[in-house]
Length: 288
Image 1 (spheres, rainbow, N blue to C red):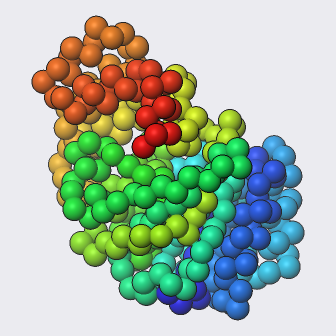
Image 2 (image 1 turned 90 degrees about the vertical axis):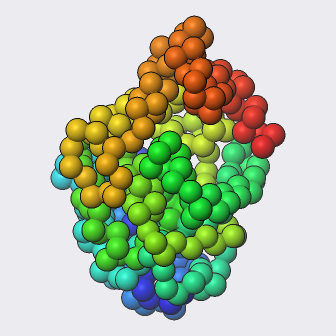
């Protein structure tokens, strides 16, 4: 990939602890790419995040730094994407790191996703995503997803599905649904990203799964299901499976007896059985 064709888009909030490490990792891997873009939308941070970003913008014209006039990562993501001018957009998060040789990436695609390294308390775990996104409709039918930072999109393709409705709670699933629309999707079987896990994350990976995150996940499914069922949207499928909402309702109930509502859908029954126990979820993720 020609890195001059790449725009990094990042929405940040209260990331003063990590943001300089992220930026240094980007600069190390884009040296000499004078037209690469680094777009940062500060989502009303209360710490020194915006000040740190502004310092980089004052010294390097490749940085575009702006404060989110609205509130939330969905609005911030919409703003960041609208500011991008290069041919490809790479999503990143403010507490993570870029690694590897980005120039080895393919040069032409609608959508690309890649493996990553998960960093938890100084321990690295390689996460192989696999080719299930390219070979199934798991995202549309089951709301299965990966972190948005594992995607790179052709900007013209991506923006056909933007802006994301700002009444939705998260941007990640919408971005996964966009990926599922692509008929030119590439799977890059290597890591170019370090996904940091820590206690202050809103969600993160299953390394830190707990009851609070289970509730957030279930509410996210319900809000997305209701929106996609009740509103016009840009995706080819008409509406998601009703079993998704029922599955989320079982997770919210926290009652084992409600698992019987999923008895005729073995896959969702087993998923709910695992996710009902935070300990079991973390254990299975660690041995996976």
